Length: 337
Image 1 (spheres, helix red, strand yellow):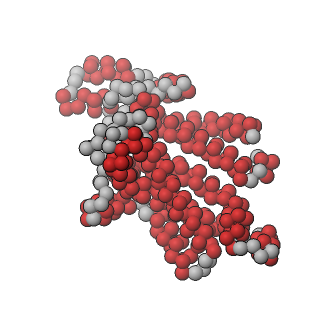
Image 2 (tube, one colour):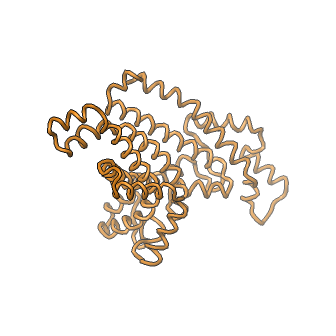
Image 3 (cartoon, one colour):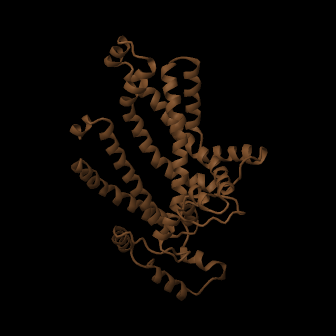
């Protein structure tokens, strides 16, 4: 197991380097000068602008800037934001719990509905329920998040008025940031249940919008994986022994069908983090996605470089955890690894 983890960590090094190069170069290809954006319409003399570029290190060759960024990133010193003048790592940690909370609830929603719908579609193969669920999953997987999010706002917030449009909690509640997770912090506040209800209502639409695509992918993978397992000889043997359909599917078949399902869930974690960029922008959710979008418009190079690098590190760590779950589900894979 230790050797497997070590090999995964070694193979992650080229990924880190590739992500750092892409994050470093792409933002510099976007038209615009961060110094000019900082100065604004007031303008400044060329000497002042040159001095500001020198202070920010933007006057050095790109190769020197990249090496400097890489050396600092290894120690998680990702620099200081050009706009807010705060350390990038501090801003990331302040906003990351909001994105994690949104992603966890979205993923929970996707698993809670996706796995049972996939099982039911496999059991009722080629029936109306099968076609209905899988057709709905295909539609859900094809919908762009920005379009789906706007539809949800239009229906539930504008027309029905049952959910808030933006934010994490009502402005009427003063909730101290104890953990950074609003669902938990609201329960620790003075207005416990009212604040918790408000945070849940603010979370519903973003989580639904973010979890729709993972739900569709999980449902389709559960169905196809379970259908393959149900063809195995040991399933026919279990049926011959007179075991109930529930025991055959849940106890015997589903465990062996879990490996590709866990794979999809692991991949969906990366999709949730990247999809959260659009979701957070639409619903004004104060997470790292909205933070990165704002940083792109302001050409805040340290924030974009550091934010993308940290997100890639988290995704690689999640993939490592998924590999370890593989070993627990199917010990035979330890020998193959």
